[in-house]
Image (tube, rainbow, N blue to C red; front, side):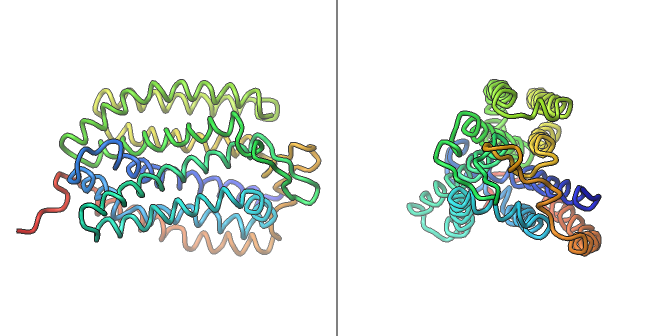
Length: 338
C-alpha cells in the first residue's frame, strides 16, 4: 500500500465525516419541521435556519462519491452496484427533500403542509438508509472473487444494520435540534432543548446495543481492538458531553459535540475497515483491499495536487457562508406583508 493510497482512503473518510457533521443537522432540522414545530410560523423559522446552507452541505456527499470514483474505482463499482436499490432510495429521499424547500415556499397553505411532510420524510429516509448501507457493509456482504454482490434482503437488513440505521437517524435528529437551539429564539428553542435532554437517554441505550452488536457481529475487535475501543469510548464521551451541555444551555458546545459524535462514528467505520474497503462474508480472500481497489499512482498524484489547490477556497467559502448567516432566527422568520 502506497502513501497516496492511504492518503485518499483517509480523505474519503474525512469527506464523509464532513458530510455527516454539516448535512447531518440539516436532516435533523428537516425532521424537526414535523416533530418539533407546532405551527406554520415555527416551521418557517426552522427552515430558515438551514435555508442558506443546506444545498452547499450536500456537496460533501457528492464530493465523497466523486472522490471514491476517481481514487478507488473498484470500491465505487462494487459498492454502487451492490447497493443499487438502497442508493436509489437515498437519491429519492434527497430529491424529495430538495424540491420541498422550493415548493413549500411557493405553495398556498393547504398544499404547503404536504411539502412540510415531504421535507420531513426525505430528511428521515437519507440518514436511515445511509446507516443501513454503512453498517451492513462493515458486517460483511456476500462478495465473490470478482467483487460482485450476491446478496439477499437479510444481508442488507439485519439486526446490526437496522440498529445502525436507527442510531444514525437519532444522531442526526439530535444534531439538528442542537443546531435549532443554537440558531433560534423563542418557544421552539426551549422545546429543542427539552427534546434533547430526553432523547440523549434513548441514544445511550442505542449506543450500548450498537456496541454489543458491533463486537459480536463484526471482526473489528479482533482486527483493530485498540482503535475500535477508542472510537466507541469517543462516541459515548461526546454524547455525554453534548447532553451535559444541553442541560447547561451551552448551545454551541452541544452542537459541536453532537457533530463530533457523528465524526467518531465515521472514524470507527473506516478504522475497522482498514486495510479493506469492502468485507466479504464468503471468504476473507475476497475482501476488497485498499491496495488493489485504487487508481494508478499517476491518477492519485494529479488528484492530490488538484485537491491542494482547490480545497483552501472551498473551506474559505464554507467558513465565510456560515459567518455571514451566523445570527439567530427569530419568529416569525418571514415577516407578513401588510
